[in-house]
Length: 158
Image 1: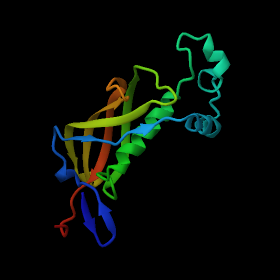
Image 2: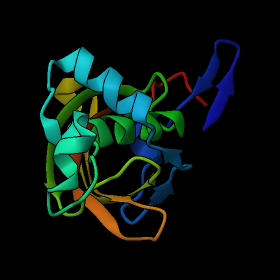
Image 3: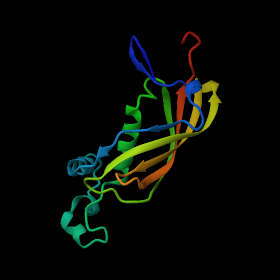
């Protein structure tokens, strides 16, 4: 990541190498996170919001919404700064939800670039990355791929 007079600047398409791996910091999932996500989305499924209901469920406790975990993962990736003012578009996402995330679990993300494709017509290039969302035990709770369009380095940029 670079710094300019206008603040941090992420990686341009040309800066990204296949095999590059980035790892985020952890984020602990709280009951408040689940309640707020349910209110925001309207998803009040009892698996997420009803502790009594879940006592008799095979998981025995409330689970975080899969999309909540995924949303936090996207935010964690953005906080790394590599997309700061250089991401042009979020082009696609494919995820598999493998394990539940419970209140008190801490998740982090590991992103590894697997493909690059120049797209001059769109002003940059596409990167495809493998994403793994891992819990505090190092177990993969979600995995998949993400495609981003990153800007090309301007001719006048150093």
